[in-house]
Length: 167
Image 1: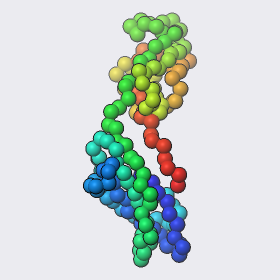
Image 2: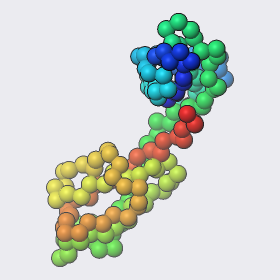
Image 3: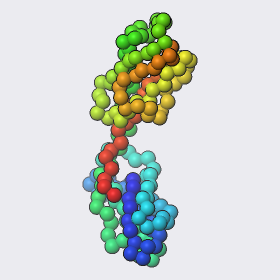
Image 4: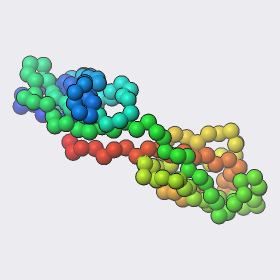
C-alpha cells in the first residue's frame, strides 16, 4: 500500500495504515511507517491476509497533529492463486525430445487464462536443471533466441498487479 501527504509546516510525516474486512466491521491489521519527508511516497506491506476482498485506509501524523481525517477507503483483493504455467510451443523446435541442427529458437507462450498475467519469466539454457527465473523478462508471448541451441526452456508467469490509485 502506498500513500503521500503534505504538511503545511513541512514537518516529517509518519503514516498509519489500517486494513479491514470488506464490510469494515473487523480490523485485520494496522501498521505505521518511519517518519518521511513531506510529500514522500510512503509504502507499507501488511502481514499475510486471508484470501478475499479487504478495505484499507491511511492517515498521516507530523509528530504533533494527526491528519484531520482518514483517506478514502481503497479496495485490496488478495488472490493467492497463481496463474497457470504457460505452455511453450515452437515453430523451429516442434518436438521437445528432439535435437535440431539450427541454433535459432522461436516459439510462443500460451496460457489458458491470460487475464491475470502481467508478463513472463523466461530462461533459455543448455542445462535442463536450470529453473525459470521469477523475475519478469518480457511481456510478449513470443520467445526467440539466436545462437542459443537450447535444450531447456523454462517459463513461469507473473501475476498482474492491481491498478494503483492516484497519488
